[in-house]
Image (cartoon, rainbow, N blue to C red; front, side):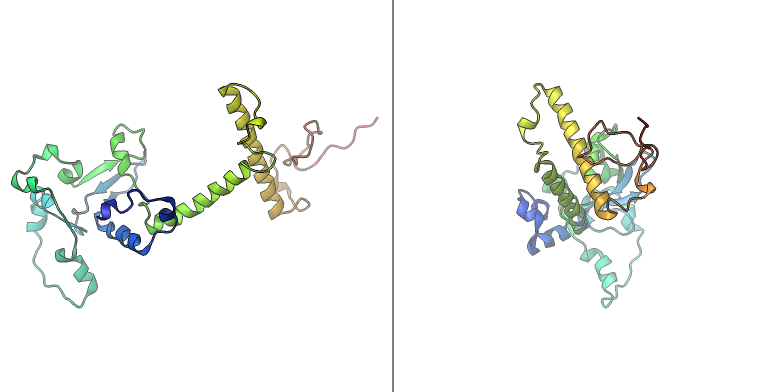
Length: 252
């Protein structure tokens, strides 16, 4: 089934989904919760059942039982079979949610059903720190292995892998225990923080050098304390006097 299409997917499948998997991912779209209301001041959104609203994407017998007025007030209309948009919007063209057989024989009370079924919509918090944190897992702004997810995932992964390569190679090599000889978890954490700071400074220095060149940097490339000193500069070097300017030599 499409709901288990990505269960147990390995790294190769995530990197390059096959045609069959892409079709199953696309078949999930009608079942996604729809956005009813955008984020509020706290970042929470209102999600709506896919069978609710004026343009439902699925058929659901449970929704029809709990909200009969949503279907009795709709006038009958003739569908033009030559119009693709009208054909796909018809109820006969929508997928159907199959409820358990026991529910058809003995429908459960409303308080035993999910909020999305009873009210048609529910609030999804921005993160798990909210009071109703159990609903935060339904917050999927980008659906897994969907085209939008792949477009967001690939550059992020490429950036992370590149950063890991910088940190674990060369003279820095944060994975080498010989570069952190201190004992104790606290000392190790402080040393690692210092090493990561040095790595970030090297990345910034490389970016500035590649984009402007060491002799073409302007005052806009410096902060209020002066230019970023190269890593080869000793720590006892004279401080900068203004943006990018060193003080004149002192008389002997």
